[in-house]
Length: 80
Image (cartoon, rainbow, N blue to C red; front, side, top):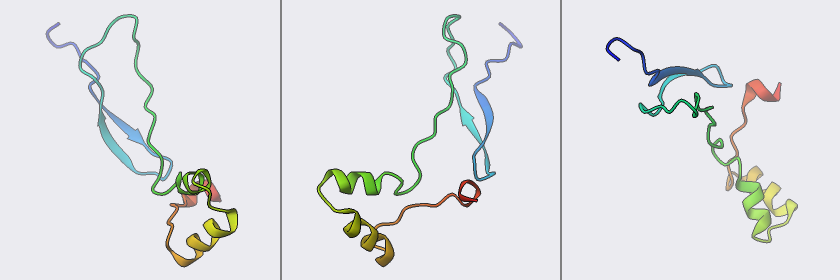
């Protein structure tokens, strides 16, 4: 095992172009393979859906966004 790489650290490029070093588990099992990284939601990304599930109308949600009460991160690279 000496000198064998564990691929614990790897560089991840996000959709916005930022590159970060992330950590994978140091223990591997042959059947496991390399896990795929799945990032969490952007800031406020799920806000409208959550408010809708709580009974808020689309109009109320839109108003909250316009007033800055609800912030939903916009990924400029994805939106065009």
